[in-house]
Amino acid sequence: MSLILNRYPLNYRAALVTELMTVVQHGDSACLVGLAGVGKSNLARFLEAPEVAQRSLPASEAARIHFRRIDCSPNIDRAQLYEHMAEVVRILIHQAGMQGGLSADSDAIPFFRLRQLLKHLCDKHQQRIVFIFDEFESMVRHQEAQFLQDLRTLRDDHRTTRNVAFLVITHRMPQLIGGQPGLGKQSKFFEIIRDHIYALPPYKRSDTDSMIDALVRRRGGAFSAIDPNHLDLLWEFSGGHSGLLAALFNELYHTFSKSIYTLLKIVHHPSEIQSACEKIVDYLHAEEVEALRALVLNQPVSPEMLLFLRKRGLIRYESAPVIFSPLFAEYVRHQFDLVKK
Image 1 (cartoon, rainbow, N blue to C red):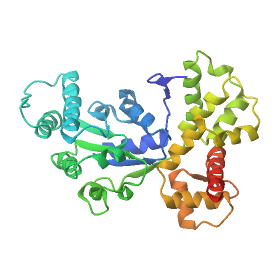
Image 2 (image 1 turned 180 degrees about the vertical axis):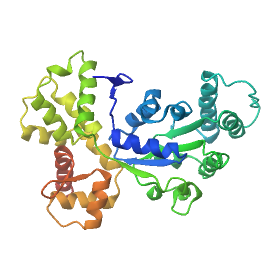
Image 3 (image 1 turned 30 degrees about the vertical axis):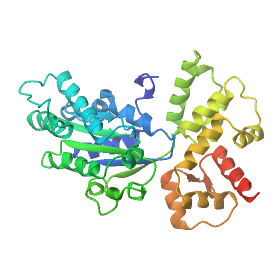
Image 4 (image 1 turned 30 degrees about the horizontal axis):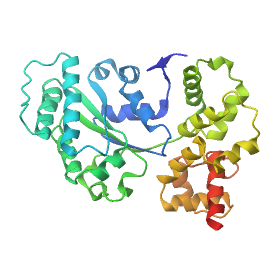
């Protein structure tokens, strides 16, 4: 299997990657919304690999477009964040041999120094940088309101060339993130992402197999040794959710003989699988949780909510709408039973 970064197949998240590359070619910013543990960080790492742009863009564009992830730890302040962004740009300038004429003031405040470096990279050398902010939701809650205005300023500095763009990755729709009015529908920052908000669904089967391949190799095994029926089970019960898939694999590796009943009951007790389910719920809205509980109880859910849940990757349609993972459905059902008791 041909892999990028020794983990991801060449066609990883192919449809979404193609869409994002089209957005980036136009110099636009975007937002990815996905369930906790669904593989958002994996996609961020994948996009950062130069081979991805080389495969997805014309050669002239791939050579000048750079995806760079930014540490979004909530423990750093605005100045530290800008210093990190500036260092990322400085390294890119150095690696590309573009230092000539660079006059960034080392004594300038971090935000001003970042603007200088971006001017050198993007205006003088016509390079385009896409800052990837993973865990953006957590970060903005801990930053001053000025942070989002500063990001808009960085983008507006290059409004004509569109050579500075952002890819923000969140658990919730950006305009619904509580405690940050700067992300509301009328905000200046929301304006630059509102036309390109994408839901990140669970993995398709091909992506699931590549992840299992990586998990097996970490244990010194071979993907070819995994029974195809066991691959089916892993994909079906995890629903293609990255976190659930890894937890289920760790639970079953070498012991695929567990019954379906036993598998479902694992979520009732402390385990890696239960923790993955808890993480998903922690980042859902109360309305989403109530709708999921209605589904497991065979109660009616409005068409509008069903459409929303489908876009979020929480349900899929068979003969009727069902929660994407039998394990997660059992977890929701069990939690409802606990509440009743």
